Image 1 (cartoon, helix red, strand yellow):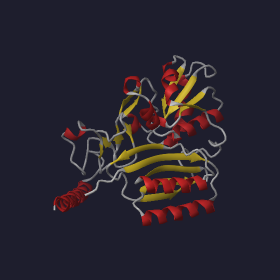
Image 2 (tube, one colour):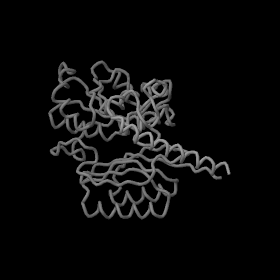
Image 3 (cartoon, rainbow, N blue to C red):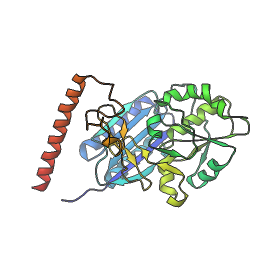
Image 4 (tube, rainbow, N blue to C red):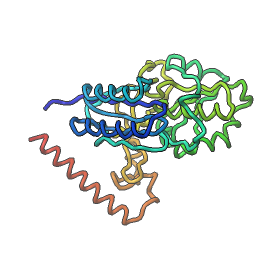
Length: 310
């Protein structure tokens, strides 16, 4: 049985995207999915495109060529890694108001954003004593891993970030004219939009990590790597280690929180039913439903294993 090698491409681009072209692209992508083993999650909006796709190399090439036509060959901020297994069940294409939801319509990242910093120059910037470093990801992502000495805004979602900026950012800035503000996220999209927000609010010296943590881990050798822990990703792998291979976390299928190997040894943990994060969130009836679902999943795994063995 030939083992497939899946290419996983994370991408995003801010640009004006017309509604009729969005629908046209969606139909063409669904046609490719129908004819080949393409999976992933893509979010499209009038401000651009964002997402991750997974397929064999030849299919990925077809998709990227198609996206280049619709984006007029704009930079897609592509990050690549590989997996022996599919990391999505199928292809989902969501048409939304924003490709990453912040809820501040007056900003335009395609026209005004901060200064890109390449991975090779990131360490020097964040080690500078005049630099504050902000992790623009959600609190549960930060809990898996982050850069040394970075600020965690402790947001549940990206739309809470503007309020954190209004309420808390100035506490970290003694003099906002001279301090560098360096921001990062998983693949670069959230920190890019965050720079646009800060520039709109009048902040200076705004920088963001080009390609995010994924590009940094790809570019920076282990002995110089300042990222501590693992990087959360929004697919079946849950997290990636420093070699961009599947990390040690899995997802609690009851509440969707990432759980470590140590978390899975806790007394509260029951696979597919509950973890220490959600022990008090669900009723007994909920847990019975989760238990039935887990039995079906376990049965399916067993059946697939038997087929493979035969």
